[in-house]
Length: 255
Image: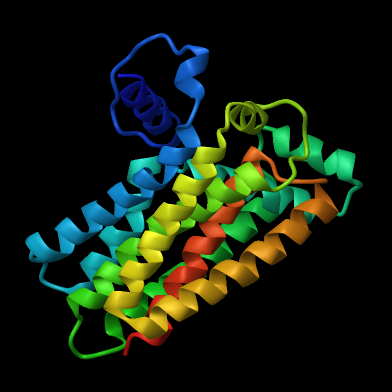
């Protein structure tokens, strides 16, 4: 029963999927990051169902639906953090000022520019994914579905392992409730996803691994330099950017 409450809290926080309503207790907040990848798994599942069971007249419609599904499931939760980070990074202010910018509820010009640039890159990668070959294989779609699960596995691990920028906030609370077993179980989920990718297409699995390592190293350095560590907003930035790079890996490696 406690695990079910943990799952319900995790999905209530990280998605728009309706969950049972109850008063959250401290025990309910434990392990919520452990179930963050399941939200990504749900996005992948919906995408697979659309592709395999919803016949559409043109591939363009799949691009639109696939691009909107993550927003429908999460409500733009991670994009909000991405936009806050874009504003903070391009302010070129001292670290303390950047941390304050992350808390500002209003959007700035650079967040809008960053979002437009992101969607142009996403649209280009999606177009190449769907039009890069004459026959659109189920293998390619399944690899695409995996990127949402993989990105959230890696994000949860960075949230639990990397240094935090603040001593308060939701991320600090989640870390305070962490268990070493959560790290191992998240690592196991990530490994299982990469092994699945390896079985589907070895070259893509290698590309996934390289993207994960390189981007995580870059992200750690970026957060330390600009914010003194990771925050909830930078976690959103991490998920959004990693999904884009993993999408590019699929589009470029599966011909």
